[in-house]
Amino acid sequence: MESIKGKVVAITGASSGIGEAIARHLSALGAKVVLGARRLDNLKTIVESIVSDGGTASFRKLDVTDADDVIAFVNYAREQYGTLDVFVNNAGLMPLSMINSYKVEEWHKMIDVNIKGVLHGIVAALPVFEGKDSGQFVNITSVADRWVGPTSTIYSATKFAVRAISEGLRQEVSANIRVTLVAPGATESELAESISDPELKKLAIEKFRTDLLPASAIARAVAFAVSQPSDVDVNEIVVRPTAQKAL
Ligand code: NDP
Image (cartoon, rainbow, N blue to C red; front, top):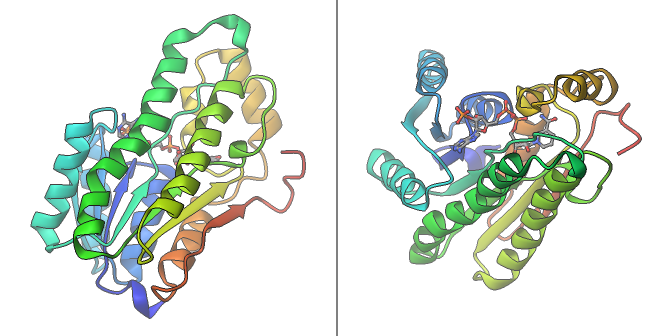
């Protein structure tokens, strides 16, 4: 993991779950991490804990639905540490519902955060990577980027979109810029909290959110991709709990 040491890594949605775990793990491996999300109290607590463990970390309030705010987040990372090496597009929501419950607001929110948020991350970080002709995107999708079932249609659609965007980005950028997609299966986090229908939330937790991976398992997958030599681009990693067979 030597090649992670000293890298500047900006992570969206780092106030809980997978983003928090990525920040903690990459920091433990020597990266300088910059955490962004809306819940400042969480970010402050996580950064204080990383720093007290000997790591280098900063945080900034971030709403990925606002392109200018994501640009300001990248600028903040560069002001803190002089450059940006890795941008982790992790922020996401999963308010599952049947299409015929017409939760249009929730569809819009998912599209705004899960798709537009990733595009805003690209708008913010790609000019930096192109300016120095190196850098890496790590886009966190889901096994729902290749699977769709009842209640997951819109969520899956957003993750299918991020998979498409990641593949197109990989092909368009220079030979020295890497694009990695990490697709987690069911993982411990606060994700199910975004399901607004109480019955559906209960069902999702009881039926699908069992045998969960610890978020650190996804962080290790990210570290694997980031730690490769610069001429090795790990394009896709799918990580499920061993017991997760159905989707
Ligand atoms: P969490 O709910 O724990 O984390 C989601 C993160 O996204 C939070 O830090 C939240 O921060 C942030 N976020 C939400 N909206 C915004 C916004 N507008 N601007 C900035 N940050 C935002 O869930 P996970 O850790 O599970 O989710 C992380 C990613 O992993 C998501 O993309 C999710 O789809 C994906 N994933 C998760 C799986 C799982 O089983 N846990 C499985 C497959 C994929 P805040 O509210 O403070 O802004």
